[in-house]
Amino acid sequence: MTERDTALAAIDPALREQLVDSICALLPHVLKREVTGATADTTLMEALGMSSTTGLELVLELEERLELEISVEDLGRDDFGTVGSLADYVAGNLLPEA
Image 1: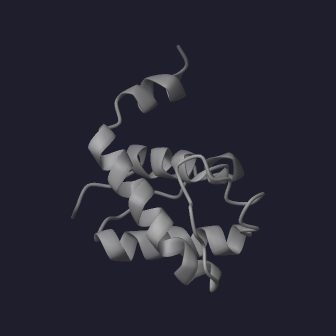
Image 2: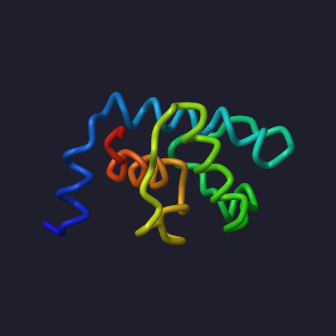
Image 3: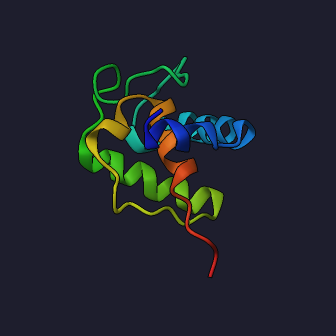
């Protein structure tokens, strides 16, 4: 089992579901167009045409909406593969409140 697999196993399923729902809800705002039927399996760059700039905007909007702070230090292109992979990254990289 890799370090990433161990981290994913530790993610609270309810938190992940909340993050997936929030990401899906923010997609139309960030992409400035209608987005329907997005799920955890929806590919962000391929299916939705999201750019790296738009991806960062999505993370910032997510922080604001959920009043969370997310460490983006290790955030990479692979984390933007799907809505679910982004939710997994966020759930595993929340910073403690100051």
